[in-house]
Image 1 (cartoon, rainbow, N blue to C red):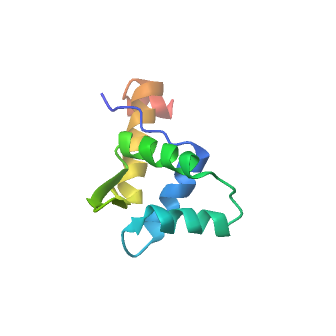
Image 2 (cartoon, helix red, strand yellow):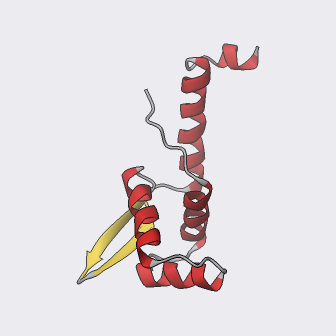
Length: 101
Protein backbone atom coordinates (compact mmCIF):
# COMPACT_ATOMS: atom_id res chain seq x y z
CA UNK A 1 0.00 0.00 0.00
CA UNK A 2 1.55 3.35 -1.03
CA UNK A 3 2.08 5.89 1.73
CA UNK A 4 0.42 9.29 1.62
CA UNK A 5 2.80 11.50 -0.31
CA UNK A 6 0.60 14.45 -1.21
CA UNK A 7 2.31 17.82 -1.00
CA UNK A 8 0.76 21.09 0.04
CA UNK A 9 0.84 23.99 -2.42
CA UNK A 10 3.83 25.53 -0.61
CA UNK A 11 5.67 22.21 -0.42
CA UNK A 12 5.14 21.68 -4.14
CA UNK A 13 6.42 25.21 -4.81
CA UNK A 14 9.58 24.44 -2.83
CA UNK A 15 10.06 21.14 -4.64
CA UNK A 16 9.59 22.78 -8.05
CA UNK A 17 12.40 25.17 -7.14
CA UNK A 18 14.63 22.29 -5.98
CA UNK A 19 13.83 20.14 -9.03
CA UNK A 20 14.61 23.05 -11.35
CA UNK A 21 17.96 23.71 -9.68
CA UNK A 22 21.04 22.35 -11.40
CA UNK A 23 22.75 21.61 -8.07
CA UNK A 24 22.12 20.95 -4.40
CA UNK A 25 21.03 23.97 -2.37
CA UNK A 26 21.81 25.38 1.04
CA UNK A 27 19.09 26.59 3.36
CA UNK A 28 20.20 30.19 2.70
CA UNK A 29 19.94 29.73 -1.07
CA UNK A 30 16.40 28.40 -0.73
CA UNK A 31 15.47 31.18 1.71
CA UNK A 32 16.90 33.88 -0.58
CA UNK A 33 15.02 32.49 -3.58
CA UNK A 34 11.69 32.74 -1.79
CA UNK A 35 12.42 36.11 -0.19
CA UNK A 36 13.25 37.44 -3.67
CA UNK A 37 9.96 35.93 -4.84
CA UNK A 38 8.00 37.96 -2.29
CA UNK A 39 7.52 35.19 0.28
CA UNK A 40 8.01 36.81 3.66
CA UNK A 41 8.75 33.66 5.63
CA UNK A 42 10.62 33.46 8.89
CA UNK A 43 13.49 30.99 8.96
CA UNK A 44 11.50 28.64 11.17
CA UNK A 45 8.67 28.53 8.61
CA UNK A 46 11.03 27.35 5.88
CA UNK A 47 12.70 24.89 8.27
CA UNK A 48 9.27 23.41 9.01
CA UNK A 49 8.42 22.98 5.32
CA UNK A 50 11.82 21.46 4.54
CA UNK A 51 11.49 19.03 7.46
CA UNK A 52 8.07 17.93 6.24
CA UNK A 53 9.43 17.35 2.73
CA UNK A 54 12.26 15.23 4.17
CA UNK A 55 9.70 13.20 6.20
CA UNK A 56 7.62 12.67 3.06
CA UNK A 57 10.68 11.29 1.27
CA UNK A 58 10.85 13.78 -1.58
CA UNK A 59 13.71 15.90 -0.21
CA UNK A 60 16.97 14.86 1.43
CA UNK A 61 20.00 16.62 2.84
CA UNK A 62 23.61 16.12 3.77
CA UNK A 63 25.35 17.87 6.63
CA UNK A 64 28.29 20.06 5.66
CA UNK A 65 29.62 21.44 8.91
CA UNK A 66 26.68 23.22 10.48
CA UNK A 67 24.90 23.64 7.12
CA UNK A 68 22.37 21.36 5.47
CA UNK A 69 22.73 20.84 1.73
CA UNK A 70 19.33 19.92 0.24
CA UNK A 71 18.68 17.86 -2.88
CA UNK A 72 15.67 16.01 -4.31
CA UNK A 73 15.24 12.45 -3.08
CA UNK A 74 13.16 11.67 -6.16
CA UNK A 75 12.61 13.27 -9.54
CA UNK A 76 9.45 15.18 -10.44
CA UNK A 77 8.41 12.23 -12.61
CA UNK A 78 8.94 9.74 -9.77
CA UNK A 79 6.90 11.93 -7.43
CA UNK A 80 4.04 12.18 -9.93
CA UNK A 81 4.11 8.42 -10.44
CA UNK A 82 4.00 7.74 -6.67
CA UNK A 83 1.27 10.33 -6.15
CA UNK A 84 -0.81 8.86 -8.98
CA UNK A 85 -0.44 5.34 -7.61
CA UNK A 86 -1.40 6.60 -4.15
CA UNK A 87 -4.52 8.29 -5.51
CA UNK A 88 -5.48 5.18 -7.49
CA UNK A 89 -5.12 3.00 -4.40
CA UNK A 90 -6.85 5.44 -2.03
CA UNK A 91 -9.80 6.31 -4.25
CA UNK A 92 -10.32 3.18 -6.37
CA UNK A 93 -8.74 0.38 -4.32
CA UNK A 94 -5.88 0.15 -6.82
CA UNK A 95 -8.24 -0.94 -9.60
CA UNK A 96 -7.73 0.68 -12.99
CA UNK A 97 -11.03 -0.77 -14.20
CA UNK A 98 -12.88 0.98 -11.34
CA UNK A 99 -11.01 4.20 -12.16
CA UNK A 100 -12.21 4.10 -15.77
CA UNK A 101 -15.87 3.34 -14.91
